[in-house]
Structures are given as structure tokens and as C-alpha cells.
Amino acid sequence: MKKQRPVNLDLTTISMPATAKASILHRVTGVALFFALTFVLWAWSESLSSPEGFELVKGLFNGFIAQFIAWGTLSVLAYHLIVGIRHLIQDMGHWEELESGNSSANIAIAISVIVAVLAGVWIWS
Image 1 (cartoon, rainbow, N blue to C red):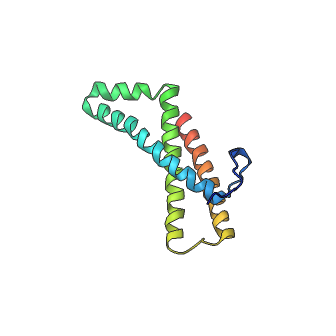
Image 2 (image 1 turned 45 degrees about the vertical axis):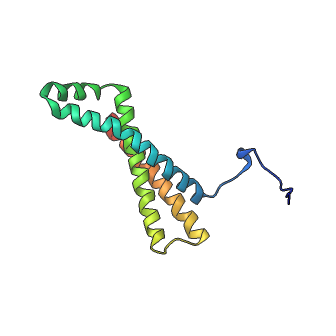
Image 3 (image 1 turned 30 degrees about the vertical axis):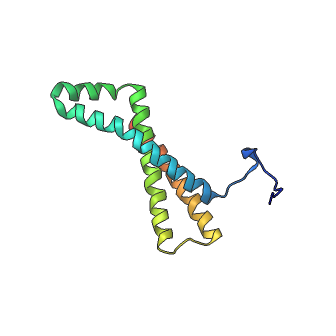
């Protein structure tokens, strides 16, 4: 049986609720953390290998690219942690209704943006 259903291939016309955006970004930040972990482990290993390695890593963090990577890693970690706590609260049975779910997603995203700005001020000051 062939069904004639409309197919919308233009994804820009779909408006997702805040809960969907928060959930998708939570998955994306999990993948980003996996890749950021390679930089973190390398810097940690190199800094603990010798005094020269420590000075190398310390010198790298004076550059813009390393500071940007550090800021990105902290921002992604903060978002993943904040929205992860939101998901745990939802698993306990809270904020499952449409209105409270959207409100908690918007609040979690807003808190994450504030934390990202604060992390940027901390790194670049």
C-alpha cells in the first residue's frame, strides 16, 4: 500500500521547541567533549612529563588558539553538565509537562550562555 504523505525537505521551515534544541545540543556537546578530551589529555600528559613539557604547555596557553580551545572545552563541558542535570531531574519525574519542560530548557540554555561568557572572561583576563 503506497501512502501519499507530504514530505518537507526544507529543514529551515521546521521550528523545534526549546526542549528539542536543548536535547540535540546536549548530544552535540557530548561528541565535542569526546574530541576535546584529546587536547586535554595531551596537555595534561605533556605538562606532567617534565619541567620543559610544563613550560611548553604553559607557553601554548598564551596563544589565542589554545585559549579558544580551552574556552570552547569549558563552555561545552558547562552546557553538557547543566543540561545533563536537567535531564536527570526530568528522569525523576519533574518538568515533564510541555510548559515546564520548555521553561527548564530555556533556563538551562541561558545559564549555559552566562557560564560560557564567564569562562571567556576568566580565560582572557
